[in-house]
Length: 226
Image 1: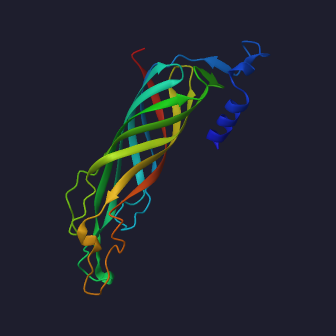
Image 2: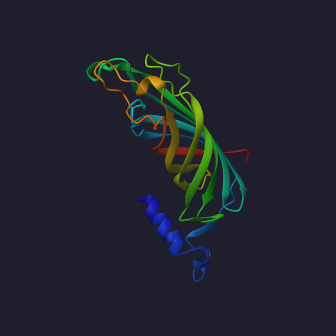
Image 3: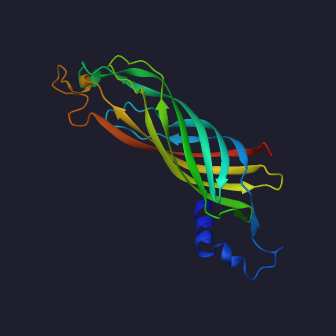
């Protein structure tokens, strides 16, 4: 809700709308981007994949570093970790007994990206709405399971929206909605028929699939090297 309100105001009343306001009454204030360190936590709604080996939806934590690089742009580096569990299948067994249990699955994502402040180098009522995008690497650092499935380490992509509230002290509170996108790849055993003439996956062309996983978080940003 906050994202929609902030974006609507920015689009309908850009910085030029300051005309007609006294300096002390304007909702816009100059802001010089610096460097910040942020810690946040939230919920990652991991989307199911065709084989149902994706981790369950779970809480996650993130640590990120931001630096202003000119105008409305900020570069960021972020580390996200999401501890969860996932299904383990033995594809050689019949469908009724194919699920043999669960195992821990902690997904880690390291990404680099760019935030764009929709209000430029100004705040609106101390708010800064953001658009973001990035690329990185996702991994669960785990070995192959009984069915020879292994998530491994692979490229990931992120995009999303953010909103910062800048306090007079320089600290800020931020909320983010981020889509973490990565790929699942399946071993040959997942496509072989068991004794009951069924296979874990029947479409042999779908050896891999991409999934987007939306995460919502809130956190605190601390200015550094001021």
